[in-house]
Image (tube, rainbow, N blue to C red; front, top):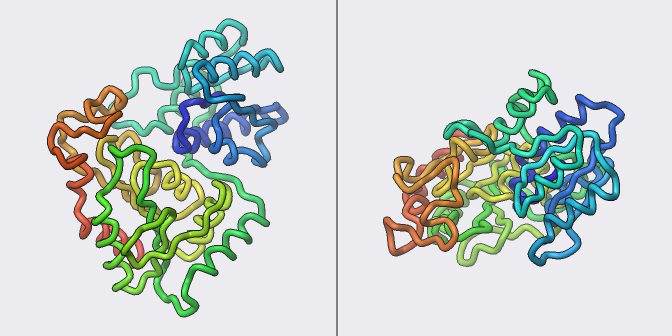
Length: 322
């Protein structure tokens, strides 16, 4: 399995395919080539034999990593999400059975993870029972216990309402909800009696920061949140997808990306400005706003994210928590 798209969320969306191929090929050695830090999410997973990562971050690193992986051990089957720098051509040239285009002809309303599974099923590599499976991250019992301890230390001893964890940052400015909305949401939740935590600092808001840690500890903290019927709220970013894969309730905020394509499975996915004519669900990197967050509809930042009202998010949380 090759996933060198670069995002944590990209690898999370691929987890059902990784686990499905493992179920269909018992006893096979399953190796994953991906980027750090996402690689931590499959290290230790009992179905994954080996995890490889590019040796450097310079141009050409992905193609070089693919070539090295193929030279180290020639697989019988290779599946890749990545076609960067002709790496898919290297795979096709030397692997007897391969799937090198998991993005082909996507409908605008089919979730990306489901599309992966449907293509692999059409290729005869997965069964019908593998379709529609949500991502799940595997954790050791000791990691689960450690996550529980971290979360418990952050919560007031008399907390009666489920905790809510906010993920205010995203890897791209175009996906960020305005900071004042996060502060307003934190105040509303605190007034309702929810313990409010934040994955990254949220100044001037009643939110306790989660202690810094690696992705596996964050996943374990999310598992502990799930055990308390808590909720994780954030934009279209890897940690929010990780929360869903750890079993937590999720409220996800979508602006430039389509919630129909990129929504978190099982989550309340809120789409800002759903009728924006500049959104391109099947080719998001070609959107006018994508790389520099220059919204053609507003000089103040992404209009689609600003269109998501605080009360709408707070109401979604209230429905989930009863």
